[in-house]
Length: 73
Image 1 (cartoon, rainbow, N blue to C red):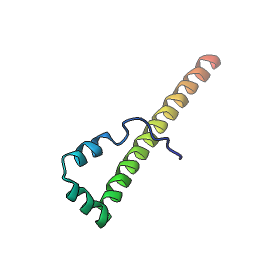
Image 2 (image 1 turned 90 degrees about the horizontal axis):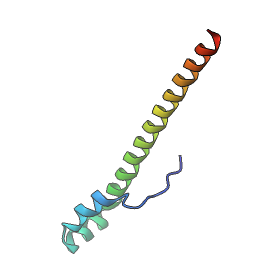
Image 3 (image 1 turned 45 degrees about the vertical axis):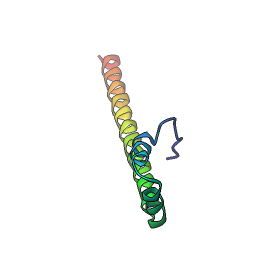
Image 4 (image 1 turned 90 degrees about the vertical axis):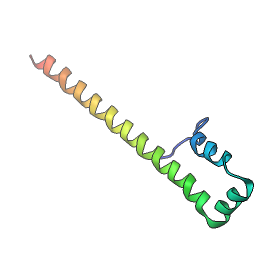
């Protein structure tokens, strides 16, 4: 599922990084931890989007079932 990055999508992570010194951010970057942090944000966003999609489909199917029952009665 392709995700489009929206405005403020990394705000919590960027707010945390703003509290760190330049040396600390550089250390995170050089160790690869910074990439992992951004990957975690992406993964969490994907899981939330999938959960929203599943909820929409369940709601849609429930509505379809109710409409069929009304037609058959």
